[in-house]
Amino acid sequence: MSMTQRHAMKHLMEFFTRIDGKPYASYGQLQGISFQRSDYDLRFEHIQASPGAYPASVCSVRMTQMNLGLDPSDVSNKNRAIAVKDYILRVFNDGVEQNTRPNRGSHGSGSYQPIDLPPQILERNIVQFDNEGVQFYFRISLPGSRDNRVLGKQACDMVMLELPRVIDFIKHSLTNQKKRLLKHCDSTEDMLLLQAKLKDHGLVAFIADGSILPRESGISEAPLKHGAVPFFAPEDLAVRVDLPHAGTLRGLGIRCGVTALIGGGFHGKSTLLDSLVKSVYPHVPGDGREGVATDPSAVCICAEDGRSVNGVDISGFIPNVPGGADTRRFVTVNASGSTSEAAAIIEAVLSESRLLLIDEDSSASNFLNRDRIMRRLIPEETIIPLFDRVRDLYENHGVSTLIVTGGSSGYIGAADHVIAMRDYLPVCMTTQARELKMPAPSRPRDPLVIRDERMLLPDNFNPSYRAERIGKTIPVRIKPLRRYEKILEYGESTLDLTKLAGLVDSDQILAVGHALLLARNRFGHAHMSPSKLSLTINDLMDDDGLDSLNKYTNTKLFLARPRLQDLSGAINRIRNIAIRF
Image (cartoon, rainbow, N blue to C red):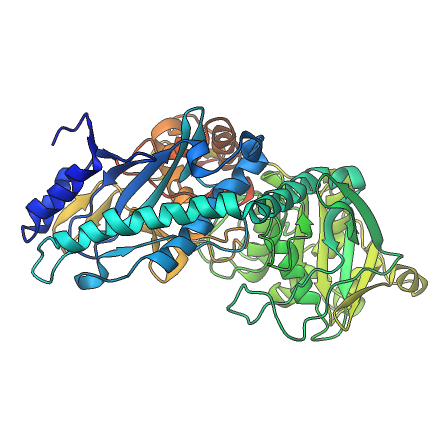
């Protein structure tokens, strides 16, 4: 077969017939070959080495927007294009589920492998639009036998019979169920626009009336179907926002500044916080949180005992530690709760976060606050608690804080706004809180300085891995750890990103890994700080898209975009990073 020509689809059927029963490697002849139907082209981008191999084979389908059922207005701007791409992937998944049969071969081969999609709508690279049409990528495990032979008839059924049905299913959904597509796009566009305008409204977050915030369980992202209390804002907390498609929405506006979210156990505080954390992205219609918008730079801050800290200046919170370590260039491979939380705040602000989200249950208590008695008993305490810095963060650095607290009244004295959750609904408590005359924060002698004077050395982010089992070095190993997808295997290192709550999809984790590879290959000698490097790569993704991360591999990567804040968080957690001060 010619590697430079397109072939009629009948030639693909003849090819499968010809290689039936031959060694599985015979499939490899398809790599780079395109086959043409009247309504689309199918191209084999990558062929797997054996039945059930991971990753599976990668194919792409290319067709005109008109053939797919799209109008130019459907992708008239970047936000709508993100929504349409997401919708196509979800409909593809539905089409596979309804029109294909899994596991035709051994080791799970002979199956389509649609990606798992979270309820958040993310920017991805596997659906692409251009002036000539639409191209989308998918994984397919080509069928093979137990003795590593081609199952040609089964492959023919998958590609010649099932794939056309899946594509017809997508076309039907885009044309005959147009209202569903428009709702998906309108909702996404509204929320992304609202995120961009939160600051203009004096807000850091918005929760629309009628939102369903609780989930079915702690391991499910599906909305609670029975017994959920629809969210509703009292008039003294309500704001109204005008959106192009939804019109005027009423809901709770969380204002800039310091907000204390209080309440008893099981009244909805953590559920509200979790919704805010996840709503740095828009949600699909029907999720229950599609009317929730959080400042897209928000970072969830928590204690992370045992993480590494690489030269971060935490002296504004911890001026000194026993043993005399320099906290202006704090280095540890085993951070405590307080030092890890201090580092996380500094790293977040350096990555341009404008909102910190904190739950006292997942924080180091001695970092959050010290009451009056403890301040008297232990005046030599080395920690300046966040309570004493939270006003400084907002007034001098423009960073708002929302803190969930149920067992301590401490932050009420520092808060601009106090919201209580009662029976899953918010109540304004600001006036009552001020009448209590709570202790105000102390003013530390020195202002909070946030800076990054570190310089990355050239030999960082080495992706190679010595595989002792096979006795050779693999030039590039970048992959999420199976069954632990927020742990990235990168070269000889494992990078634990579990505490980066803004990463909601394994394809974001993979994108982080390939951003590190890009950093090594393109910016290895640029003498940047970790903060500057994160900003530089983020700007590159803004300009060139996610495929800017795909330039150093031979196969199509399935990527979802990580935020600047999560990319920065990942770089700062690399244990063997080399830095000059």
